[in-house]
Image (tube, one colour):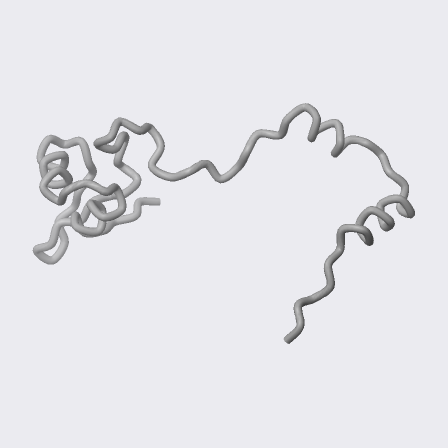
Length: 95
């Protein structure tokens, strides 16, 4: 689903001048629409920002290392698990 914003909001999101947003829209690099005399830009249509980065937002995940995977797959009995959690648990902060 498209997310339509004004060119100034898109420029703020992508950290580039509004003139660059409008120039890219004129060249057809960005999806735009006219509504009520206003121009809107589809923020999902930006392929690459001006700095050349291919990703505008940081990744929302990290890769699991082999060591972490082995630790997750390791079976552990409930008594040991409770003892480990009890050692690392912190009490609530005082109000």
